[in-house]
Structures are given as C-alpha cells and as structure tokens.
Length: 451
Ligand SMILES: Nc1ncnc2c1ncn2[C@@H]1O[C@H](COP(=O)(O)OP(=O)(O)OP(=O)(O)O)[C@@H](O)[C@H]1O
Ligand SMILES: [Mg+2]
Image 1 (cartoon, protein in one colour):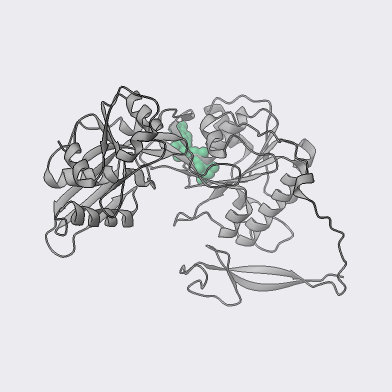
Image 2 (image 1 turned 90 degrees about the vertical axis):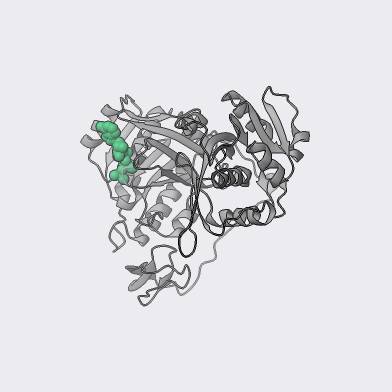
C-alpha cells in the first residue's frame, strides 16, 4: 500500500530549488525573495520493488513515420515554430499581460486544418466569442471549453480527439489531486507534465499560454522551460503596435527565427518585410546614425543604429545601450580608443537600435563604431549606405555570414553602397548593382564611411 504524506516546502519561483526552510536568497540561482510556500505530497516507497520489463532498441532498427507538421497557416508563426507544430509536442507561449497572446493563438487556431480545442480558464465562452467576432473568425473546427479542472480537460480531449489543444493559460489549470492552489509551481509543473503525457499518447500538439512575472521571467520555475519542447516569447513595446514572436528554445527548429506582427483593432497582421518598418521612421542623414543588417534567423533585417556622444560634466561618463549588449559596447569603445585614437573617456555614449529591435550579432559592430565616431566628430555618415562587419580587438574587420543575402536585401531596399569586410569578397558569387566597398581595418573603414 502506498500512503501519501504531506509536508511543507519552500520553492524558488525562478529555478524550482526546494528548501525545508524559507530563504531570502536562493543558493542555486542567487535570486532574492523568490521563495514561496508549497504543500508537497510524498508517496511512501513500496516495500518490495517490482521489476519492470523494459526493452532496449537499436536506433538503426527504429522505424519513424515521417510525421507531418501541423501548419498554423500563419507564416510568421510557422517560421518561428520551425515549419509548424509537431504532433505530440508541447509549446509554451509567454508574454506580458495584454500583449496579444490570446489573439495570436486564436487567429492561428482558426486557420489550422483540423479540430482545435481551445481551453480557456481566464475568460468565459461569451468573451471568447466577442474576441472571435472582433477578429472576424469563422471556423467550424474551433471548439471552446471554459474549464480549469485538469481531469475534465483531459476527458474532453479524449472525447473530441483534437489535432491541437490550446490552454489559455496554464496558470489557471488545476489538478484537484494536489492541495496547492492553481498557479503555484507544483500545480503548473504537474499539469504541464500531465498534458504532455496526454499529448505524446494521443499525438496532438499542445499550445500552452503562460504568464510572465513582473521581472519578465516566465511564471513558474525554470524546470517548466526544460519540460516543454519549445518556448516562444511574445514581446513588444506598449507604445508600438509591433509585436515580435521569438523562440527562446525549440527542439524542432532554429531559435534565431523571429516572427513580426502588427496589432490592429481586428487582430494581428503579419509583417512580411521587417526592414521596411524598421527603416520607415528614418530622419534624413543625421550624425550618429547608420543603417546595418542583422540576420534574424534566415532573414536579413535592416535597421538603423543610433549613437549620441556628449561631453560628460562630472564624475564617470555614462554608457547606455538599448537593444545591444552593454559589455560588447564597452569592448567596442576600448577598441575605438586604442586602435582609432578616439578620446571617449570624458564623453557619455548612448546607443540605440532603432525600432525596439534587440541585436545579438557581432556583424553590427562596425555600424556601432561608425555611429559613435560620427556623433563624436559631428560628421554624418555616407548617404544611402549599409555597413556590415565584426570588429576584432586588434581593430581588424572580420568576415560575417550570409553576406549575399544581406547585399540583396540592401539592394532591394534601394541602398546604393554597402561596406563589407574584405574577406567576404571571395564568398560573393552573384554580382549585384549595389556599390560594394570592402574594408580591412577600423581606421580605413571609418574613413570610407564618414567620407
Ligand atoms: N478593440 C480593440 N481595438 C484595438 N486593439 C484591441 C482591441 N481590443 C484588444 N486590443 C488589443 O489586444 C490586446 C489584448 O489582446 P489579448 O487579450 O490577446 O492579450 P493577452 O496577452 O492574451 O492578455 P492577457 O494576459 O490579459 O490574457 C490589447 O492590449 C490591445 O492591444
Ligand atoms: Mg489572454
């Protein structure tokens, strides 16, 4: 006989670390004030362990039916998923309150070929109907269930055998066998595991909507991110209508892909050419601004790098980077100082990737250096020019990937010149009408760009 025993534990909401006492700082992830009280049920070990019959397989003998991905038919969404939803997989979509998570999953649900079960724990069926009318959704395959009880959800799944199950949100689902309230870490983890088991067994894809905490983490412990197959973050600025869907983790696709949407009163529309929106608000050829290109997944995206360099009055000069890694900025400032002789120690440097984009690629280094030099010297950069290149610590300009795609995109958007690393010249096979300027080191590159 197994006997359930209850005990109180304290769990870190950030990483899932368990402790018998409350702690101010988590010893595992070093975060402060993250411990919450949870009731834990432990089952007593059976006195005699029964040996389970298990089977091992040689990988060569395992036959796989090439499983078809379930297309959401929203291209930007499918791209981030790596081509569609895998049957049996669990995808978590997280984002700030009101960013448009329910809108996104509902629009995708209406376009999926196959039955979709939309489980809502936050809104009533009436509210869902109102939203679907606003989004002009007409679908016979979309079934709505307003329920939070895990067992009822599971039995409904068995009854309607859908191809996709959407749970909005996983924080509202409640497993009645557990003493904890809905939304606690144990509940979120157990409900996700249970739905995951069901998804694998019945080969449907599950889309779970998740909340983020005020610090921007996905509510629930990090273990949740480990359990699911993909974690997608839906983000955007409150004051902009653009929304970006980004894969933080994907077991079945590239995590660099982003999907770009624009929010309207009748729902989200896809942005097929992101460069156009990022460049739409450019203001002439001012000092400290230059266009560069970054690969977002398989697409090159053109956007403007802006720098403002001002003399600092007292104390330490400020360095502020928006959309760019702060440490990378410090490195580039040191290279500019040492290799190009720029005096920046008594200047504030403010750097911004225009349009709210976040960049992690070193290919924008040269553009950052050019924008800073342009602002410091008060000279505008060369007109109608795109600048690409990684800057090494020695001041050398290093080659970047996907050069042809970047050149094509710059040409398509009407730019006349493109500055690229010299070593990239040999990898260009297709000639383009754009004027290609190869550069080898930081000093000569800046001379070309500011001329
Ligand atoms: N009538 C409307 N006109 C324009 N935009 C609207 C309208 N109604 C809703 N929206 C947009 O939709 C957003 C809310 O979308 P949605 O309910 O999908 O967000 P959510 O991320 O699911 O929110 P929650 O975290 O509350 O579940 C609003 O913030 C607003 O931008
Ligand atoms: Mg919602």
